[in-house]
Image (tube, rainbow, N blue to C red; front, side, top):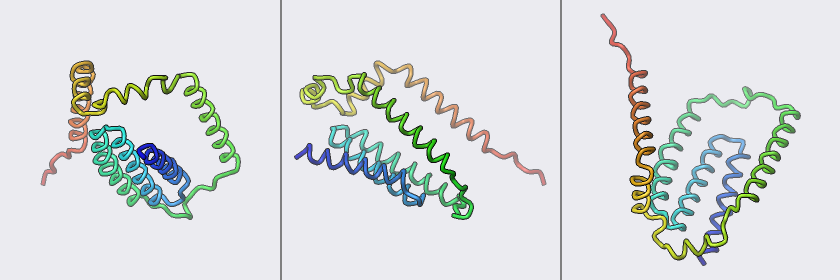
Length: 171
């Protein structure tokens, strides 16, 4: 039963991600992207990674999608202002997509994407996706990169505040 739900959600993920790409209306594309992120959240719950599911739900489905919709509202998307796409550009896009597909297929074929004992390891370790394990790895094995990234984010916030701050006007 669990595998049937997993395959159904996987099919829905692929279906809605294709709708994101092929949708003509940008607002519909963003809505399909929200549904795609929701299917990813369901995948995380099925894989016993509740923390990642909650973070995906809050960050991607909340903040980033609101930002996308806000940008779409600010853009002036008229049908008359769209550039005319030549058939040469369409052919170049198809060739580039096929090259990417061949490259990804070759990389996945030679990488041993799923080792032989991967499924047994997940079954033997039911606490694999818990926040406790994430915290132990993050704060023991990767403490220095975590602190460096926090300093980088802090400096980016300070820089954004300094750039956005206006000088007071004299009357």
